[in-house]
Length: 249
Ligand SMILES: NC(=O)c1ccc[n+]([C@@H]2O[C@H](COP(=O)([O-])OP(=O)(O)OC[C@H]3O[C@@H](n4cnc5c(N)ncnc54)[C@H](O)[C@@H]3O)[C@@H](O)[C@H]2O)c1
Image (cartoon, rainbow, N blue to C red; front, top):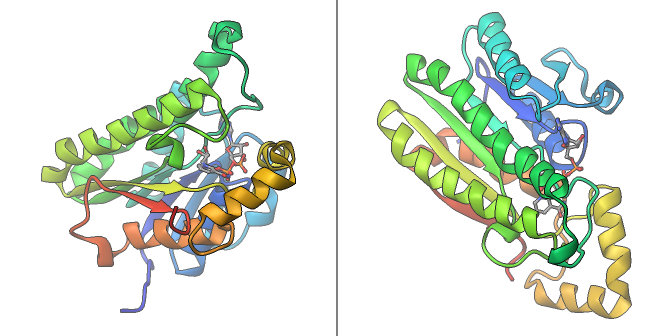
């Protein structure tokens, strides 16, 4: 089967960088009409093209997030795939639990878990009305075990994203809506992952490489490929699943 998303409408968050940019570009290459968002218009500019529309939305603002989804449904008339990718450690690194502030905890939970909840809630009436849809969360290896980052809120949020994915798969499956998650391993995509990589030092970098059966780090394209698969008819009976994309740990 040749994948073809012509006529389909896809929304991608965190599309200004890393995985989100690769996911948006991949869907557009496969014919979808893509709505891509991030906090920075400059970050989104490399994506602009005939079938990609970009919008600046701060996903910590749930009302603005819902308005973005509503505006897509209004202009495109449907929304087939929602990729909840935006997230990360929000510039944080590990520090002892007793020194973590409420604000640090809340910001990481809000962007990773709160935005996935708010966007899924916003898109559900649209997908229910069309009796079909796919919601894909980008979780992490940190949804399944302790996080390499050491950031407590990040590990907790990603475990929460996995719970949300499984729960929504059961709630929304009867309406023809599938909900699945991609769990990437460590990929060098941004200043935070560069800082993590540098902080590991040569010995831990080598140990990380040895722990990956395929012997290399992943790329944003590796993550985009599995995201597209989960959105495609090839995955039409896949629901409530988490697929690790980590080269085999
Ligand atoms: N890179 C990795 O090693 C790795 C591993 C596992 C999981 N992940 C997850 O994959 C997703 C993407 O990771 P990435 O490495 O591509 O990250 P990235 O930092 O390169 O991209 C994330 C994007 O989300 C956007 N974003 C952050 N806060 C936002 C907000 N409030 N509103 C709107 N957009 C916002 C950022 O501007 C950024 O462009 C994240 O959820 C991350 O937690 C990454």
